[in-house]
Image (tube, rainbow, N blue to C red):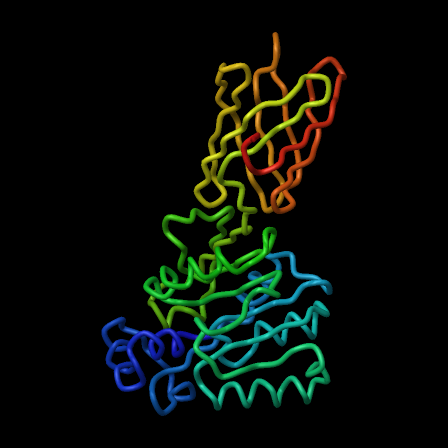
Length: 288
């Protein structure tokens, strides 16, 4: 994956070299190509990105801006994952497909020349990115809307701004110094959260029914439970993919709720303290 795609998609082929110059990107002669510079992602960054996303043989990795295909090919060859790469450069796509065929992994991976905003990402369990900030802002809503809860997104150097990342790691990459003058890489990880915004009917075994209202902003949320016209705010809220947890005062103590979101249903357990654990469930939609 390289910056060539980022520059071309945002500004067009004719502007790529000019913008690269403004960004003070110094490209060695072996990487010069017609239409603008292509800079591959260093192998150490590829490995750290796949490791950060915990990629395994059950994963389907989609690389938006796949360049030479190294991320998808490494995921398939070393980690037995399947994959799909999208790049605007038809020659890079051709070479990537040829390399996959030579390695005998073309049955599990493919590359396609396409605008990344037209790519179908719904089957991805992992998405990898190396896009400039404007592109990150533009692709953020697509990924949040189209990826399934629990999918992981890993980005090299740039983040989603208002969609806060769940993890960050910075490490030395000396070979990057010719690109930006900084011999370091920063990786960001997001886990796509379930969509829980709205009103829910919550039932706690042995304690009746509550009206639960959740207000979500990406993986952050707040909420309140109402019973018999008494409202109590949720505390210690957490949402990680489909896993949800919060604390709600119940009687003289606190109930610690954990559960799994499945569309319009949440089911789990409440730890009431003293070794007492009961089940709870919530259905989206207010009681009629």
